[in-house]
Image (cartoon, rainbow over all chains, first blue to last red; front, side, top):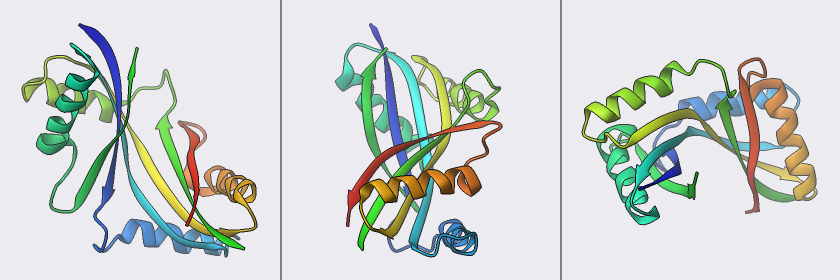
Amino acid sequence: MSRFRVAVHIVPRRGLLDPQGKAVTDALRTLGFPAVRDVHVGRHVVVEMDAADSTAAERSTRDMCQKLLANPIIEDFEIASVSTL
Amino acid sequence: MSRFRVAVHIVPRRGLLDPQGKAVTDALRTLGFPAVRDVHVGRHVVVEMDAADSTAAERSTRDMCQKLLANPIIEDFEIASVSTL
């Protein structure tokens, strides 16, 4: 068993309304960043866990995303990185 | 001017209480993932913008983080990637 750190990005699905991203876009443009075209706000989740190897850590994290971390109706997730601690 | 996509990670500062991460850790352990040791929940923000080059896009995004996207009292941010669209 080793300890791993797995980083996950959970983002609103493409094509769905993203009111938080729209609000941040408008706020940035008002605050003096007129070059901003679009903003998407998602979650960055870092899970530290024990696992036999990095493949097992990644598989287990995918399972966590499907069961708890992401809402598959409105969100997509991707494993951003797996590193050893 | 080209269009760039800049991804930012905004995370709770190390050493501060992270009640959301603690709640997710406990929920995952209860849901059948006893190997989970710790979870940190932050934000994954993707900004699409026009800029002269990738250095300008990154500098502008740091400015946005300091002014609006992150709360410097309780959060740290890092530019995760800068890519051309």
